[in-house]
Image (cartoon, rainbow, N blue to C red; front, side, top):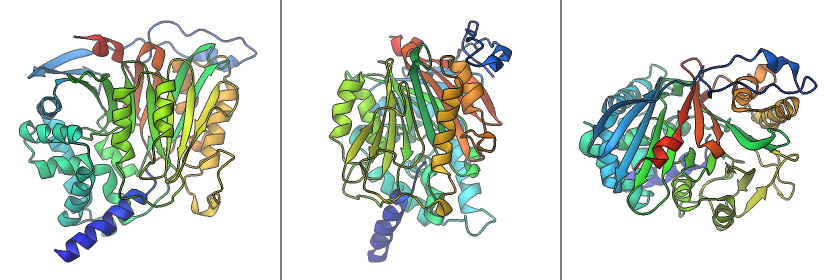
Length: 420
């Protein structure tokens, strides 16, 4: 038991110090920009939205589909929402668990293979730091999914497993534009990037949590069965996503920033209130939290000892990858030779693309002309891009894509947020 406890501490320390880093468009015609802005946009096609179709219900929760995107509407207390989640996407959860066995337990590549004890130790370490309300969701899933609690916890922790075997820098990115870049509304683009092996798990689920505790309804965009906020929006139109920051270790005595951000979406309806919370937060791992509402965006660079807000790179635009950009940090920059994620390149490419389409950026332009551009073609997307999300907070809409598997799919969240 002493060896196991020691192993747990080592695993968690390594685990949490790693950089972390999911064609159908909005209805209506694209407003053509002035020729001086970008003539190439005239060739953009116009797409109609797919219909969100009801599939089934269970104990007060409902499952919908928009193309290949699953949309869950979950209600009641947290245990009840977990039960609904477990039953409504039961097949997906079981498939996720099967994939974990194939990719980690039985991987022919010995460098990627992990033992059942290693996987369970990591999964429990993640779960043990959860607030009780979110533990209740996972308990509920174990009651209805056909997976026992240990298996549910494996699915919940799946993003962390390979990061133990091979330390790596983050490769995520995000960009928010508003004002002169969009002629008003905020448009947000987000790449959730990881090891390309995660494409095997990439079944996009938009889980809308509507608990009966008076909190704000929240939509999380993630893998089936993964209960934390890496990308999410609430019913008030507050959007946030998390990228890893500069590598600097892990504070084991703090709550996970991923569950903290879930809580913040449940509690705060605007950037003013969220700003107070972010400035009061000491994270457990180096993070860059990019946020936006219907008026503008911010990028919070969160070290283990301080949080600094970066307002914009230029008027109406802020972009981030996985390296701090605030000028007041006294941190040694990443060695480019040890940074295969090319942080400055990815961020710089997003800013250049934003400038190229300044005054003409719509959700369609963000998807096709910015987020779809590969890093080899001066964009930010690459082979490790798993989920892509574009958000229009004012309209409570998101578009979700899995490169090569699921084309851009519009999910109209307003209808579910407002549904009683």
